[in-house]
Length: 287
Image (cartoon, rainbow, N blue to C red; front, side, top):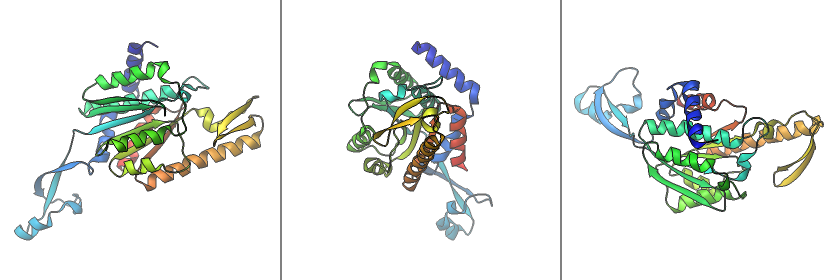
């Protein structure tokens, strides 16, 4: 698809799906991460008790609460997996299509708030770094890179670990990081764990619906699963159910690993309405 048509399509889908409601939803989740003291005000019963300035209370005998202002100039980093498996499709969308929708939705919100956007595209063999920029230039640059099929040429089992290691080496900190990948790990990567101590991370797994559910159709195939090929007939209901159960368990276990290290997790597949799922996901975190 022509790059201009693709951007117009993404923009139309974003506006049609959730209007402007997404343009604030992810921001409020970070109010207590990067904030500055603004002023004092009289305490009201609905104000958080933890914001009461007890030193001022002791000095004046009146209840005052601190007012904070969110630091608007956040650094938003997109760590984007461009291994060739992202071009896989079984229905009408590729995993890369979903990745583009996720990126466009979140980056548009960041651009709306004039946040700095940068990106690291990786496949394990090569990386492409787009430095910090405000406004929409980097959004278009990333969409352009994702539209270049020649970028999707390698698959490396250590690709995510290498990307996280690179970010640690350049001392990435105080950054809001969105990891967009189809890589599903069995445990928590040490480089990711180290990165999470200095940044806030959202790990978004992108799958094809077929990868998670299989279909009850007359087809024999081999799947690369847990480092080996699994021969399976989709008419073999017992084997299909075994695969689905283990797949779900793997996703849940990985989500738990991330959660224990204060990393947020969301999985999406090609059957999902990306904009709706992200909107509900961020809203659920803000409650």
